[in-house]
Image (cartoon, rainbow, N blue to C red; front, side, top):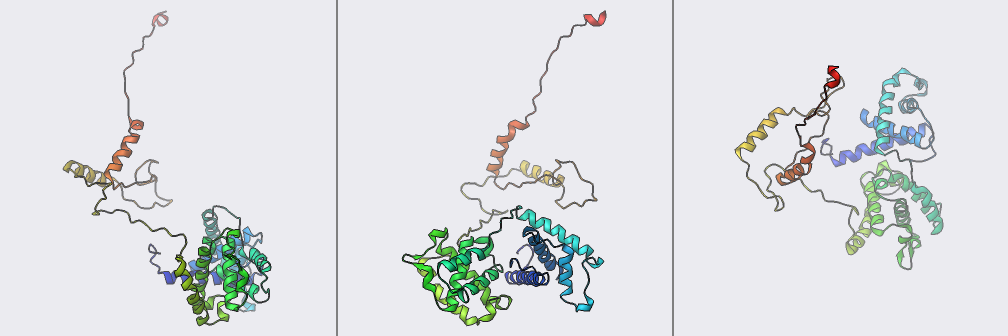
Length: 343
């Protein structure tokens, strides 16, 4: 987000708009098997196009674009998928689809919390018309957060069941056994379920109008549930995010070195050599297909350039690979018999 200059609130708003776009087009195409500015529409259309292929519900990219376009028009003005209006946009969708497949590692093993949710609702004797049905809708709202990328299927199913039970005000004790919540059986933990609960509550608090369940309750209802969960988090020391790694800031120019990397004086000779290499190296810039390409090993073109800030580490790496760059030259004398040539 820092690289693109987009704030966190703007990113959340764009993500929810894209999900709403997918949902509207899905309904227009009658894709009811699984609930699942221009650049925003391209990404949403490519995601829906990829999902159709993965779920064996084949739809052409033109059909998806046509359904989205016709949503804004009357029945008399509808276009057909073969219209030339969708030609350029369709190619862009196919290109984005390839990027999404590569980013996912071509892993099509989708795991849905809805299937396990139904089994858990039966196991814990939840009312299927109230609590279980609301939990099912929460699973669809859950895809408006990052929880499906962070949590396992049992974690999401437990979180939706618990939040649904809290909203209905009944049957919360069904999830609790003699020793508390039975999370060990499903290879999850209370911390992960709590994180998912808070993700859902944040969604219903800040983007209630963009959800299925949030529109049926007031903002004070979700804030009240959040207040009841805060004492449990404080008493048990649960973190807001279960898996969190602090980013280490790299040392920059002018930063004092740590004891492991002591400061070293740079002589005038080294400075001159460094300036000479800096002048000789070409600027780093992307090349287009029409430009002439340099040699494969040319610096700054096709190879990877590394900048080493630790001089001691640079010396160790240079010494480790020095044997592979040695040029050995020698003189070898060969005696030849010229008798055959004279004959």
